[in-house]
Length: 130
Image 1 (cartoon, rainbow, N blue to C red):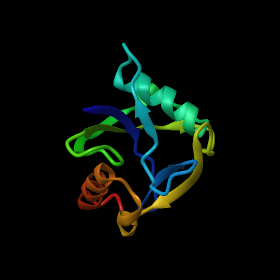
Image 2 (image 1 turned 45 degrees about the vertical axis):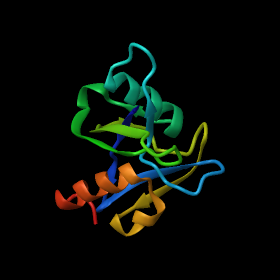
Image 3 (image 1 turned 120 degrees about the vertical axis):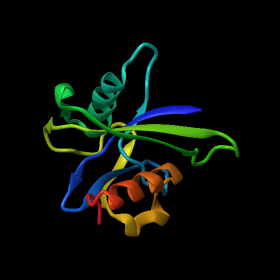
Image 4 (image 1 turned 60 degrees about the vertical axis):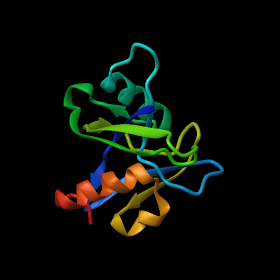
């Protein structure tokens, strides 16, 4: 099980996705926790590293935890994605290993990871994602 935390940043019916250098798949921004980190500590650190913005930890709101086959891993390896919304300061820019940012909708299902497809469906059913 790969344990990850992701930030759901929605705007105008779209969600912010990231693509790492050398990859062709988009992922929700976030990443793996370091030993001893809470979900929110992971969220703040990862988003600062990947997008150069500061998450307001006090505003973080859990919106769901989702599991699926881990993209690019052998069969049976799953990923658990714990997702949060949160306010922030700054303007997201591709940083660290992130090469590109994109505003995605359910029409982008063929460009995202399996767990993100589940998350996108949940956001769409909730009326948050086009």
